[in-house]
Length: 304
Image 1 (cartoon, rainbow, N blue to C red):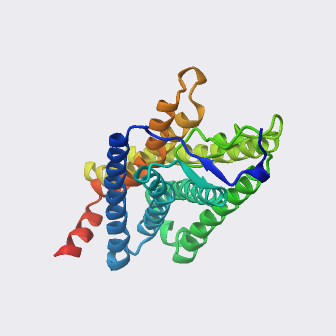
Image 2 (cartoon, rainbow, N blue to C red):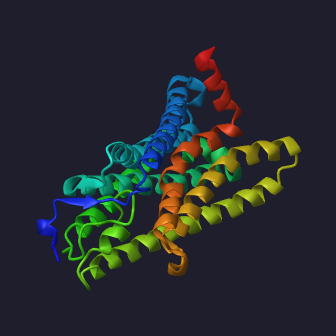
């Protein structure tokens, strides 16, 4: 038996014990990481450099790219380093910092996705009031509120999680530090306080989900009333990327944390965790740029 005061490091779950497969994992993660850096970096540079993209929609698109860069940089480099050096260790403070940053960045991104649904709602359902409701000051305030909410959520969960006494060793069933895996190491009954915070967080996240759904119900109703096919196509093109990113974010996160215990296994947990923590930051920029001609033109102009 051990307690949290004697734990100096945690042992992360290894993808494999075979050296060749460890190196394969390193190169695979390196490719995904470089792709995420390139994709998100190009979007950030294009939006920052092109005056035509200095609008609320692209301002809100800039923020998730920053968050995606931070999110994948929080988990993937450490996993690659462990594979390269054939180790599983992460220090106790390093685990706390990783958990805090991952919670901050993913929470802030979800809040920003909620705000982006409001942006699309105003643009399509109340176009005449768009400049009034989404002025530059309002956009900055909403983005700051999303970042601040993510920071507060991460601070509360991280402080509470690492204040729990740990009596079940130091091995985590995950390739990065995550609350459910740390709670498994806590003493019997000590996790109830954190469970209360999780319930509050789930209620808040569910409220955001309801807001997104209601926004899109109104958006689709307004789109059906647009008389021209070209107008409907343009409205659909601006909404589809956001809706696709929200769907990818929610499906992977919900399945990862709410999958039935009967189908849970270390291998499946690893695959699912990669799907919700590694894949979205690399794929989101492609989704956003796929149907956005203005963004494609700005990217093209970067190299013209």
